Length: 282
Image 1 (spheres, rainbow, N blue to C red):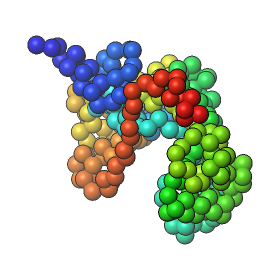
Image 2: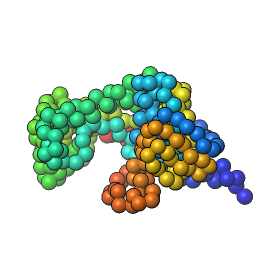
Image 3: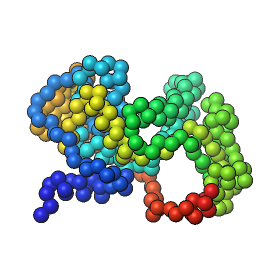
Image 4: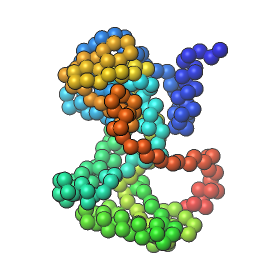
């Protein structure tokens, strides 16, 4: 029979092409050994939790930060996504304007653009080998309705203060300079995006947190999250600040089943492309 550790390894790799491509073993860190006290406890070792832990230690090096994770760092969506580091605010800018006004929406939009560069800075500073490359994004329309939506999106960006340096509408000929897409009717290009191997990024970020003194306990499920404490399998973490970074897994906590609405994202992975295909795509 396979050992429990090998069964876990297989389960983690089966969940994600990115995780499966890692050469390092996916051995969980030590679970919570018993009751502990700290200044901040973070529940969830995905991007939300690990970036929070990282900057807490950057701003206050002596703060005691503990992260508890039910599986391993990057097991959830942080290790299973399309590999984009992209700017922009999800949802309707018009709706956000009703709460905070256009200026707040514009500032938020600009902050997401700066964040792309900040991630690249941290990747470089921490030596995280995750294939980060900021080359922008290209959105291609191949039907009239797609073209209309693309142009409407560009107008909305302009209303938020975007210039041609932020987003440019391209003709099919101009679009082909970036990539040749059959049937292209129009395209838009923005420099505010990068590509990344998300599994390598999240795993590298966890190691960077540990170098700063963050303690990460994996295979440690949070059973109850309350002000001042997180009760886990194996013990309770008490802290002045409890930061819940469970994202969609929040729905599995007691009384939180309706906290999120289910959405989905689809991705396609090809076999490795030979040089002649890259040449054809331009």
